Length: 342
Image 1: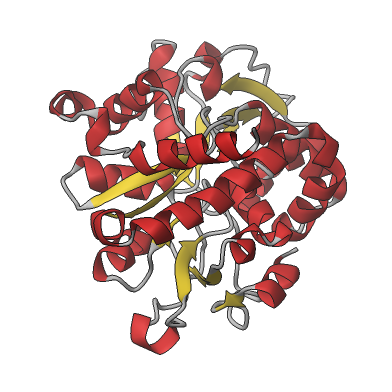
Image 2: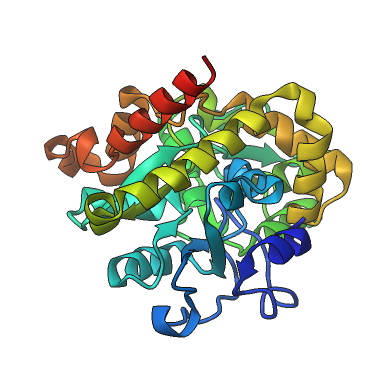
């Protein structure tokens, strides 16, 4: 649980995170505390991580809960912030790692000196849901309907547009796309009929199912796309490699613990506290995330290529996968962990 996390690590956002915090798409906060300066908050012996309570990086929180970072000699300080703020804070040195994959990957693709260093989910998190009373049996039936997203330009929006285009519909012409707000607001708008369809993600997709909403199309059935991961600055990769490898070693151990089905009850406990949802929704989120997870932290080149193409369009052709994801340190860590297992 996050309270447990705050007991085990120096959780910078502990006091501010409670009342105004709402989880949204992959997953961004509706209220964001200011990014504190490194000098004011960082323990000289610690590691500062920008995070946003994303269900898609559950393995990271499991690693925290299990104490794997502490076992690697790392004292983590967590700071709640939006993805775009993570990139800037990483570049300025205020944080050393960020958990918003899309923000780090997009910044790297545009030339910023950051790199994704571990991938977690290898499949996207977004699914279109519809009301059961609107007689929408296929995506093409959304013509003339209203589809809700968290905001234009967010992951929910990009996913919805990719699905619509795949089925031959033109977003904004054939289907009206509306900004609704955070995940709970999307579910409420769908439930009350303000919109006909919504682009949802865990845990909100499973809350919608409990309310009787109907799954229409899952982005992961159409495209291989990485959905989550952790990024850092090129400065950390070059100048703090031992620390980077300690961090990655703990993250990989958390990932392997998360994926081991024998640990299901413990992982669901962590997710129940993290998502502040009932165990049924937390377990559904666990099953979904586990099914789409990498086993070694390395997303496929095809998935990364698809991601760049969808995010950047024609300009992605000049960008290599290596400009976005640096697998070198992780491969070293994987080899060392496997060797230690004998």
